[in-house]
Length: 630
Image (cartoon, rainbow, N blue to C red; front, side, top):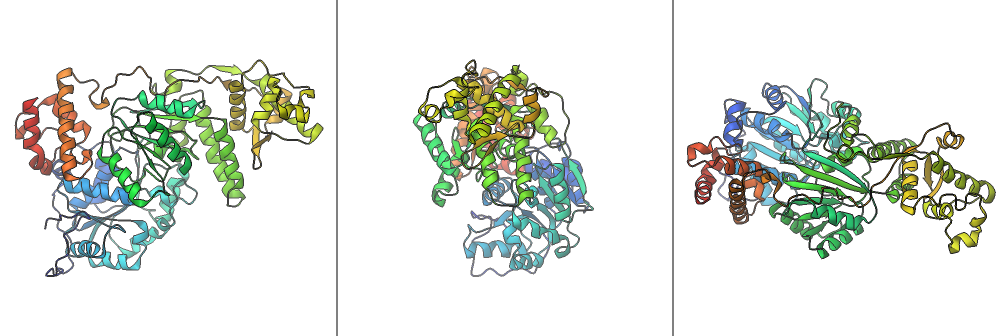
């Protein structure tokens, strides 16, 4: 049966009679056959083959694999080889839609059940499942918690259960979803069905929590490297963040798609508007926008080249777009896990990509204040503080950023040569005296006048400024007044930020007034060194001198690059006609291979990675015509 409607199932038919429950027969004798026929790949990558074999043989698996590492293949292939229907638990509707579209483009009978469907559409999917006509069915954890959904699934036959984004089960993680906690009993509800938990983001503690909460004590664990070598990490001191952001985006290859993350809805809308005024095709996305606006903006981002999405972290986890060339943060993420998850949306296709962040003193003060004023008990706030401390350590390191990032996940590595601190090692200076001047000012204000102030006023005192506030409080009479005139305002803000990051200073109260942290006493005595990094302002994240060409074709010969661009134009037209993202037709890597090898017959298409049997039938003739014209 050919499923042919947007939700992944046939339209309702009054004369349709459900078949008796039965398992869908296996379509492929081996995993290699499924991989070659459906996806057009000749071989598995990394641990994929071992994971696939483990599940095909009926074993459970926990899979920790970075974004872009090919997690979806590890559960889709077993679902195609084992008899029955693969159940995929996915937390976001957008991800379901994209993966079902991609599977159907490859000739796989896939469907989803979610709130975007009408009752008749859901009914049609349910009938197809019970009749054994689906290879895979996607549901959200909230829907799987429903007794009605579980009863439906028991009427059919499951081949495998895959729980994607499994880190959402971690109660103290960055993406906790309560309904994930109810998935631990799936082994009892569906005995004998192999289960998988998959994520790209897990510390040792999260890994253990996944194992325990999902009752996967007997599972085999597959932990791949968290390294994404194609991603360049850059973090700059925040000076004029919007100007810096514009410079960064303009430094990227022309036509690049990107995501810009901001902390608040207001910042999202203001940043998108500012970028649009600079001629950048930028769109906002946050939970406060009308659903139709979010859907329209997301659709443009997925289907068009060169669109920049400015968003809160509500956007992205379910976006399966492989050719995002950059991710930028104009506000500090709350944790390293969140930062890794968000930056991981760049370069899923393995092509060179850049992630950039502007980070400043205000970010540190704001995050500390949010923790202090937030809900939760002391233990919860301490966990949040540890998350923030790790994030600040990544921002302030003078060593390789990738080493720091991978070390957070328990992985050792050598300096990468592809981050800002490797490419342009930061200059450090002895900040002991500067720190002592600042700490002494805070001590004197507290002891002599019972006063506390934020960074701006303290810097004015140290620099000997003559402001109404200084005159009002007669702070020009303090012994430290003017002692820091040798440093600029920006330099002092850098000092404050780095002292906050190390806990030498702490921000307190609603207004972020500064006080001494526990390590401050040793600094005041001169017993603790205070090496500080010297900020470099005005640097762009990607190198403004870069050639403006599509990165996937950057190193192709001129004639092959021209053919690549012609294939992109053809692909865009096909995608528009079909109403799907361009990468559903072919990814950039496939177009690159076509441009390099210039196949001239249908037989030669078999050697091109990413062209399976269904896509060869659907697009092969048209592709050969484009190549012949080229």
